[in-house]
Amino acid sequence: MKFILGIVLAVVVVHAFVWLLYLSVMRLQAKREAGLLSPLQVRLGKAYTFACLAIDVLANIFVTPFIFGEIAQELTISARLRRWVKSPDCRNRRLAVWFAEKLLNPYSVGGPHIKILGEVKP
Image (cartoon, rainbow, N blue to C red; front, side, top):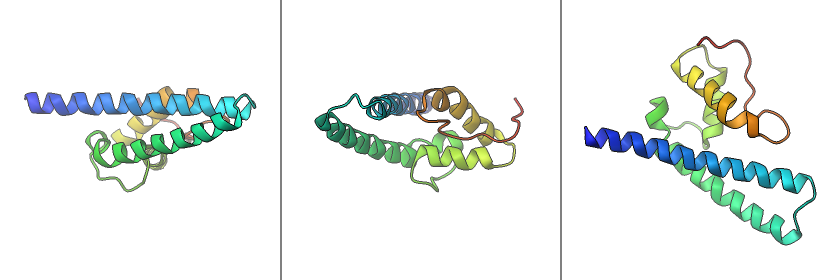
């Protein structure tokens, strides 16, 4: 039982960390688009974004399968969510829509991070 609770806790903590990285990258992007970053800050921001992408890929491969019950077919968590959002209504689609509507799209710069088409049953 402790092992399962440990896995659940690890999944939650890793995804919360990846979400915080996403928020910081979106903030950097907004500042860059507004012209508020120096050339050095832009270069450092690109390096930071690349590091965040690497963490996203690792989380998608090793942690996200515990949420969606499948091995990663895509490179990033966002790509996985985009695939599930387009799928027929099922648990994983509802989960992907929730992630998109509650955690990603409200903070996305330049439009929705993940486009949601059609109605989702609760």
